[in-house]
Amino acid sequence: INVGDFSPGEIAHMMRRFVEDKKCALVVIDSVSGFYKSLPGHVLLMGHLHEMLCYLRQKEVLTLMVLTEHGLFSEDKGDVDASYIADSVIMFRRFEAAGQVRLAISVVKKRVGGHENAIRELQITSEGIRVGEPLQDFEAVLTGQPRYLGRRDSLME
Image 1 (cartoon, helix red, strand yellow):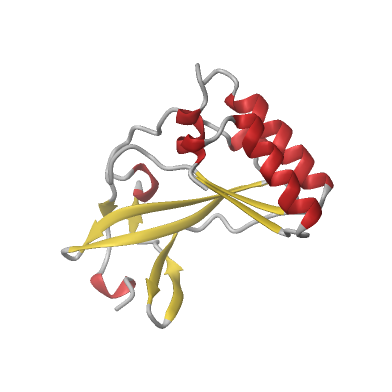
Image 2 (image 1 turned 135 degrees about the horizontal axis):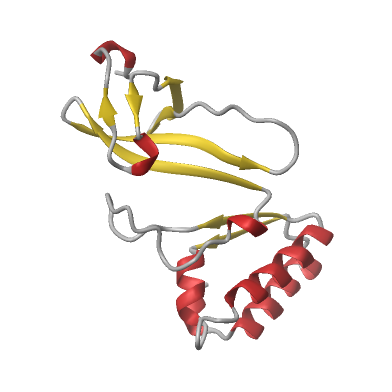
């Protein structure tokens, strides 16, 4: 749905109907930024999100939230920080290397259990998803302003 077409109460009601009537097991909020902009005054966003996520967790519904940043290569993190209510946070960042725009992936938060701290290159192609070796020859990849310190052969072809 286009969240801008509905009030937060209408969205919550529709979500509840899908979960209870249609046995929905997955909810994707793409994007939280759009949801934020649909709220009058924006102040209530975290309360609404927290309430929705608590309900969805009780119903054992996997919830994925997409939070976009402003611009492709901006360091501006946007208007919303929902990381404190998320169980896991996976960060995707674009970076430039060898004359190409590439994509990095890293798990920056996992509430339960350990997780790998490596930053890896990610490729999404028509053949599927590939995750490369840790980007050990770079630093500052997640800032959007990476510095290359190593050899070209450390990147995926």
